[in-house]
Length: 83
View 1 (cartoon, one colour):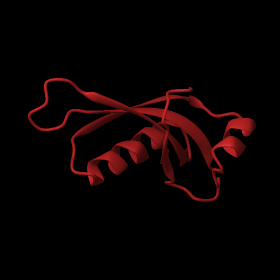
View 2 (tube, one colour):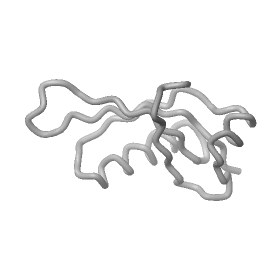
View 3 (cartoon, helix red, strand yellow):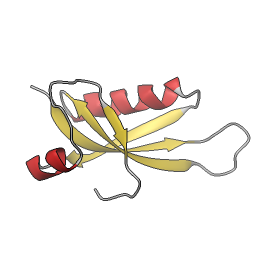
View 4 (cartoon, one colour):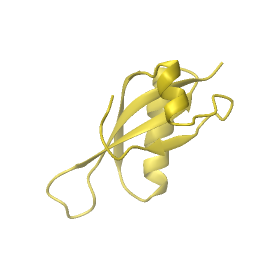
């Protein structure tokens, strides 16, 4: 069964001095899968990325972010880091 995780994705755009951090929520099988899914999503945008799973989301947070736990690989970005 899939679960939802809060993941921090760090991307350093080409030529940039500093990395940019993007908080996302991910539907995945486990915490390691969540990091892989988030990193692959960031790579699809054309940037080298690293992802770190912060924690599993609560049922209330899953509802708040309108996540479908049947949709493995879903990624939603967050405006603010609330993990």
